[in-house]
Length: 320
Image (cartoon, rainbow, N blue to C red; front, top):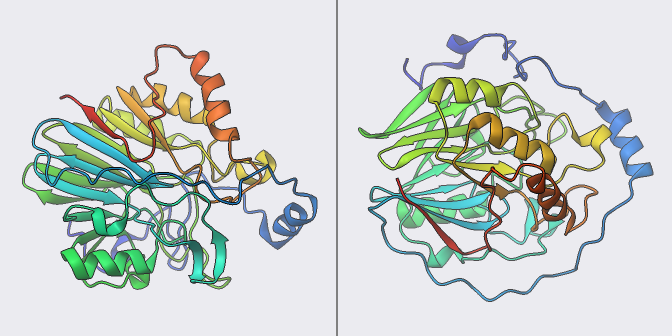
C-alpha cells in the first residue's frame, strides 16, 4: 500500500476520522486525573545536573553486525550495513515548545549532535516534545538531508519536507534490503492542549541484513508486543523504555515500568535488549535511580534475559 495516500484511506479501528486510538482503548484520565496527580504527586529525587565526559565520536560507517549507541533518553544511534539511523533525536536542553519552557534536561547527550556521523534516516516515534525536538530535526535535515520516517500526521510538526508517514503495520524500504515498519504502541500524542491524539504514535521494526531491530518509542504494556513477535519472529535487538512510570495509577496506560519491559523482552524473544527513556528528563515521579534499580530486580528474576544496561555513549556491537 502507498504510505503517502490521504489519511482518509486509513480509517480503521484506531482512527475515527478525527482522532487516533490505541488498539483495545486506553484510560484517559482527563483534566481531573491530571489535577489529582499534580496535587498528590510525590516526586522522586533527581540531581540538578549529571556531568559526564563526552563519548568518543562514533564510527563513520559500520558494515558488520549492528552497532548501537545510547545517546540519551530515546535517542539511539543505529549503525549496520553501511547505514546510519537515529531514533527520536533530542539534543535540546529542555523538552518543551521554547528553549526556556519545558522540562529541563539533567543529563546532557552522550554525543554532541555535531559529532554524529552523517545520518541517513531518522525514525520518529511520535510528537511529544521529549521525542520530536524541532531544533534537533532541523539541524540534521539541514546538515545531512536525513529522510524522516514517522506516523500519520506527525510530519506537520517536523521542520523538513523529506518525510514518509506511515500507518501501523505499513512499511517503507530504506534500501532494497532494509525495511522499516511502523508498529503499534500504547500511548497518545499532543503538543498543545488542543491537538490530543490528532497524530499517530508508534514504534519501528527494522528488518536488516544484520538482524531485526525493534525501537518501541514510548509505550505502556499491551498485546502489541506479542503481535510484533508473531509478525517478525524473534527480535535481534530491542530498545524498550523503562522510565517515567510513576505513579502507576496515572502512568501505567502509557508508560511501562521496568518489570513490564523485561516481560516484553521475553515476549519478543529478544536476543539483546537495551533500556531507553530514563536518566535524562524528570518527566514523572520515579527518581533518577529508580528505573535502573527496579530493572536490576526484574532482571534478577529473569536471569536468561540479556537486558543490558550499557553506559551512555558506549558503542555496543551485536554480531549477526
